[in-house]
Amino acid sequence: MGLRFFADQCVPATVTTSLRNAGYEVCCLRDYLSIESPDSIVIAKAQELTAILISLNGDFANILDYPPVNYQGIIALRIRNHPEVLPQIVSRLKNYLLTNPSMGHYKGKLILVEAHRIRIRQ
Image 1 (tube, rainbow, N blue to C red):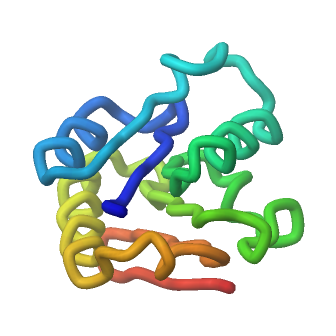
Image 2: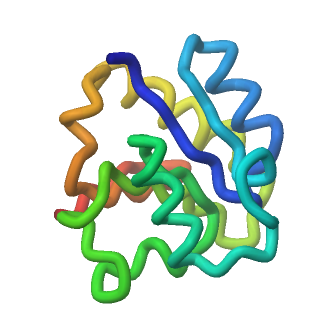
């Protein structure tokens, strides 16, 4: 199975378009839920879709509230109030995805993507 993502409502269209153009399946929150849905419902929908959650929402990067072991995978894009770094982050993410094309690689992991690095928490 190829990589499947569930994009939170805060993920810019440029990110979802870039991932789709790279051949990945991307489901968007607004197509399944209200954009005001609580985080617990958002991550539950990602699980239901057997998708890796991708978000800019820092709440999903809290491993105490969202232990990675319980999920298909969480990718947190870390822009930190600097939207100008988004192209670098997307490029870094796409390179990582090419190197790790299996859904199994992401299961139980929180992947923090920053402009200058990627960190993985389990």
